Length: 425
Length: 121
Image (cartoon, rainbow over all chains, first blue to last red; front, side):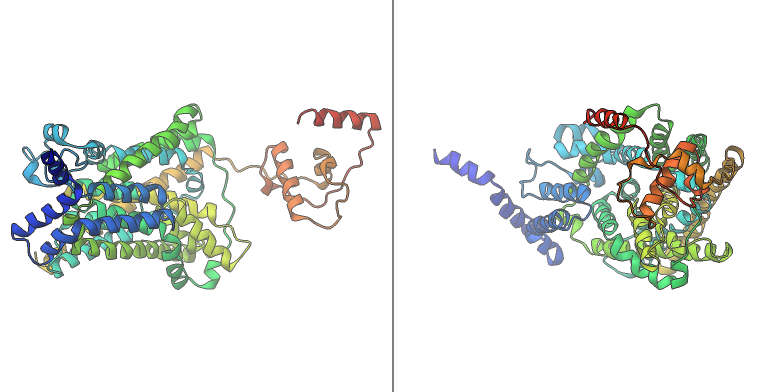
């Protein structure tokens, strides 16, 4: 009779916590690894709770951060190795020990994987980010961009942060001994500067899957912090006169133009950067569904039901890839720092080109709309509006800033395609 | 990999990457400019005169105590209503004045109208 009670006690999470720590120390983990082996699991649970606090109380991108944080919590609960209760095995997707001929061992994943492993296939196979883009397309109005084509350049300039951070990550990898950032890792970190969660996840799952949780968390946290990060840079780089420029009213855009735009963008992008098509193509499909007005039901489901389902799956599984051994590293710290650098340089890139365009057009363009070239839609545009209105309360920059803002989505998807075509094959 | 080696490749990728991003978006910009040439016609400037405003907008829904002083909200509403009924943009209109038109319909008409409106609630 006691045996069954002892069996139960030996199967509890508390027992697993103690046994795992003992095993790791017996296997010779010392120094930092030893510390992670002993307190890693509780520490990850604490980090998950801090993220939950940020999501729920501080409302930092709660729609994503909440599932991410809870996914982190679920996959870091203390479990015995090989327990059937483990919901997520990130090692199946990142450790080449588990691969067959360099590819995922699907049979093993199906046989031994938990719920989150199954859902994570949607990330690993590149299904979720394009579907999110489909929903974003249904919600995006490219009208302000079509009305003011020049503003697309600001969306390109804001990719400066992506590439400078790429350089920064390479330098950090070469200079700091504990950090191993090659070109693939550097690309994934750089793309944080695109301020586009799905794009960052799409690149990282292909190029540097081990860094996925850190990059996703950094990207979404900084997106939530855009109203804090951007205004000081905007004030630093522009003068009071530039900030108070009132821009001309945008022309109305005809239905035909709205219809042709998504089709042409898809074809042009495919001709130059085919690797960006799964993102840009789905974005434009969503937009065409919306603008055509003939498939209202599809539009509704893509931007509500479908997008919400995918957001839950994406957040939960990305969070669940964060295990103590891979997350509690110097690299995560590096990513957090570089992510901020990326956001700052992207903002600066857009502003600098905005200033140049302001000079060239004889003061017709308010450089503040340049900072909206980072693609966090519509936060970045709102920040432009807010900062502009502080100088000149009767100035409405919002629609002008939406042009660079949606261009930034295309720009960061193209930058992602560039990295993928250079390093994924 | 040494620092110089790593950065050398990095700089190359950066330059090529930025060129590609810019060229794709510049092509899209040209496409949009071409679209403007082909599909967009400048709307004719229709300067609507003040009395036309009075005709198209029967101002009977204002509160009777309407002050003659300028109310920017009211002007915005009037401009939008006129623009919508004339099928043009509010930016092509210049409202010089507006005046409340007295409703000189018989009392029974007014009562009937009110009844009809009330029955919709």
